[in-house]
Structure formats: C-alpha cells, structure tokens
Image (tube, rainbow, N blue to C red; front, side):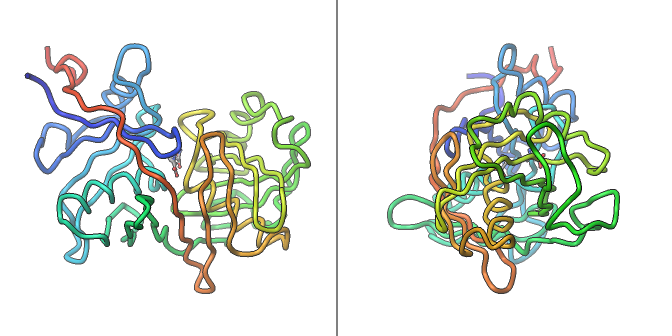
Length: 281
Ligand SMILES: N[C@@H](CCC[C@H](N)C(=O)O)C(=O)O
C-alpha cells in the first residue's frame, strides 16, 4: 500500500491522527496548512489533534511528541494524546513506564493493570504571566464575564485554560460563548475554556471548548485545569473524578504542584495517508 501510515486513536472520544516521524521523515516538517488538511473531517482523515512521534532530544526521554490542533497550529500540551503516545511507546519497549518529551518538558507515564494510563502532566503554573493573561490580576478570580459565565480561574497545564464554575454545566451554550472567550483579549495566546459544575467534593462535571478545535468530547489538560481550579477554590479535594462528555478522568493535584491524569486509551483504525494530503501529487 502506498502512502504514509498513521494510526487513529482517541482518549474518551478526543481523537488523534498519530504519525511516526521516527520511521517516516516526511511528516517531520508538516506546516500548519498541511496539518489542517489532514485534520479536516470532510476531506482529510479527521481529528481534534494531529500528533507526530519524533526521536527524543533528551537522553532521559523515550520519545518526543509534537502536537497540532485541528486548525493546524502547533500547541504545547495534550493530555489525552500523551496517554495514547505513551501506550504506543510502552508497547514498543515492553515496559510499563516511559517518559514522553514535549516542547514544555518531560512527562512520566505509567500503564496500569486495567489498561488505563497515568501521566504526570508536570507542574501547573498559576501566575498571571504564565497562564498567560494580559493583565496582572488574581488568577483565582479573573474578572471576565460573558453571559452566564463570570469569575474564571486561570491555570496553565503546559497550555492555557480559563475555568468557569456554574450551577449547571449542561445549561451553558458553550458553542456560543466558547469561541468569544477563547479569543478574549485577557488571553494573549488564546485559551481553552472549561465550564464546570461541582457534583460533590470528589466529582466535577466539565464541558470544554478547545482552543484551535471547538467543542471536544474530552480534554485531558482541561480536566487537570478543572481539578486544580476546583481545589484552589475550596470546592473539592485535590483528587477528583472529572466527568467529560466522553467519560471520566481521574485527576490528582499533588503537593509539589504536579498533576496526575489517569484515563483510557483506544485505537480506532490504522491507514495510509494519500500523498495529495501532503501536497505531493
Ligand atoms: N485535547 C487536549 C488539548 C489539546 C490542545 C489544546 N486544544 C490547546 O490548544 O492548548 C488534551 O487532551 O489536553
């Protein structure tokens, strides 16, 4: 079969086209337009994020992963895809613990006996400069309102998040408010927007509008941000289950500010990318 092989994977319905740049150097230099073409759900393969596994740069890491959103833009972090890539690398190496390198650092991942994967998403950042925000405001109470949404929590999990708490997350028109907030001037690098309601001190319902994508069924870094934001506000403990449209993730905010995310990994199919999608006819 001609073409570049890929595997289609997902974590709770947040779906990825995964290329292996260690084997197929043609995918190492994808530009934004090409990535967007591959990610397009009508004329490409279709995915929320496009992932390229590359050789590790750091001696401690087992592989490097590059992440692009559905719009083609490169981003720093993706929790659900990190579990998927960790699962691939664990299978290759026959180990249950691997280190995945991203542009924002090294992430430890462990395979559990039930098939789920835990990833240490690194230390969350809570300073306004690190989210980043455009003003020096309290990141636990960002003065930002739109319709029924106000008083956000800013969290950086490698990527920027604005978390809103409401009584009933289901009642919020996230398709209407998400894109406006993603592009709000308070977020100079744009932001992923989470709308959450507290079920009890151990459980949060979360819906997400992802930067560069739109509504997705799950966002791993978003769930980390929601867990940290809820604990910071005193609404939950530091270990919670976050219920996304696609199912639950377990999030634990450790005393050293690292955040552990645990959830499933799934493979949908594999295939070969037609050369025309790379721009080679
Ligand atoms: N789906 C992801 C997050 C992907 C990146 C995000 N859209 C951004 O622009 O930062 C996850 O599982 O964390």
